[in-house]
Amino acid sequence: MTDLVSRTDRNGWTLLTLNRPDKLNALTVEMFGELRWHVIDLRADDAVRCVVLRGAGRCFSAGHDLSAIADGEDPPSPGWHSETLRMLERLPKPVIAAVHGHCYTGALEVALAADFILAADNARFGDTHAKWALTPVWGMSQRLPRRVGAATAKRLMFTARMIDADEAVRIGLAEYAVPYERFDAEIEALAEEITANSPFSHAAAKRLLEATDGGPLDAGLQWEVMESEGHGPDMHERIAAFTGRPRSE
Image 1 (spheres, rainbow, N blue to C red):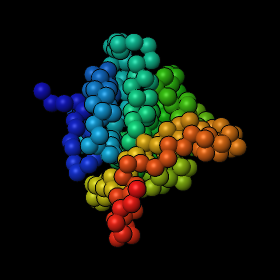
Image 2 (cartoon, rainbow, N blue to C red):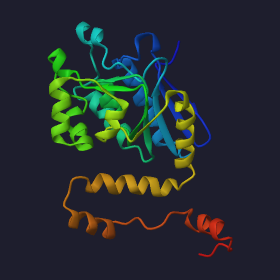
Image 3 (tube, one colour):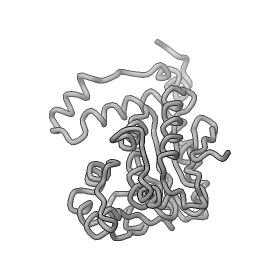
């Protein structure tokens, strides 16, 4: 049976692929279950220093499977989808959502749980909860305004308007966009660039950003000093490699 979310391990990084291309990777409880299993495994895998999440076929994902909603899907518990995305968000390693084609509503909620979004120039984003008389329960009302600001989040949520990759970059939803024909190469180059740096620093930075997000500046500065995790076990080796001098403790 084909995996609904496939995992491919590369040189120090992992590619997770939403894998229902015949259904535009529309999201189901079963897909979230497989995503959750991968996230649990990745958390304990020190060999993986970066995670990229993308979609198979024509797009990242068209969003929550409306047929599943109509049929009355049955998640394991209330808030289970949101909890799964929080687990993805809190992985102690960088997570990139690589988005091409459609990225609507539930799919956008998934992408927003990544540390940032890399977009292909054919990507299109939108929140259509209001179009279907739905309200967010996977994190849209919390992560979207934190990413783009409250007014812009309201505009996207109230209009259900689709935006292209350039607009997504302009408002800060996506970090940058590349031509689709270079998308695969950019994913690999970006993952390898991140993987080359210290996994200790990545994990510490994510914890620091998480702890101080949205708080007062002075409190954040104090937290940074008082809660510093110091230097990692690879610091001396990295500095010695750069300076050409023997490692010293």
